[in-house]
Length: 364
Length: 96
Image (cartoon, rainbow over all chains, first blue to last red; front, side, top):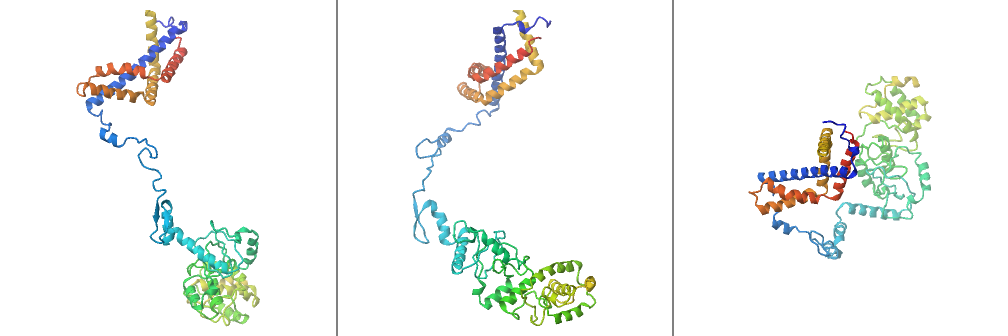
């Protein structure tokens, strides 16, 4: 076929148009044929009518087009204006509010306990004039017990208390000063249900203290309600709290070691301690322990004002103070004596033996 | 007119060779499904089959019934687009 005389450019538009139309109709006819073959095969194979619904079902599920009703025939606000009688309080409640009302009424469900607790706490607060605390609500589990005279700074979505501490930022600074003396309790709380320790009798206090950590937070004046092994507070703190609340020679910690108490040694006792230190170092102190005891030396230093409950010892007689003891002896011995107490606290109950003196000999 | 028919044949050949015809075909099919043409026609088929009887339907019957209706039912937009593409092709490949 000679190509040079087959030039479309020579064609006029109508012919071009006709050509295009022809090509187009060829294509459409192809499509139609394709459909016909498909249908014919479906018919002969027997699956052509499979996707049809029978007449009966068609009637059942017809689209409904009446006013006041959706396309399925359901009424929209059927229960809106109906009222039910609450079996508990015998009041007539609107139907859409019935379920939440019942939850509150019966005292079941998640929110009702929260609300009840809030009410208790707020009634506690009403009775006390307090300095407030602007902790953030970081630690949901940390229920602190109140010293008694402090407003709980819990997040209240519904309760807009104008006296709430959160209204004024300045309060925060005050608290910051207070908390300087106590670095043991930097954690926040958000729970208002602290029990006022002042209202508890000694027996209750004692039973509380045997099961709970009980460390009183300086910022919040509340007792920690976590377990005895709560990681936020040290055993020293727990002992101090028990001394504070129950008197010096009252109950002992459940996991008591029978060791000298670490905080308030006199100078004389410091000497006794020193002699003990000269023992052959028992090998039961591990490097990690001494490291930790060393770290907590700083803690005990700052805790000087706090009295600690001695474990089985009379605190007036016993105790060596890491913090307080510094006055008696040199810095080295103070750290050592504090190490004694701290390591005592941390390790096996049976050993009053000081940490390996070899490590700290050079301090002397 | 043989020149004409020769020319047509040549063009068709070119269409096929370049794969353009297949592309156009696919495009047309897709558009027809999209616009519901296929479903319409299928419904018409059902009527025809019910009329003629399921057992005795033949391809010729179907073709005879369906094709004219099918041609008529193609929407204008689809037709225009396809014509446009064909003309573009012709313009691009005017020199054979």
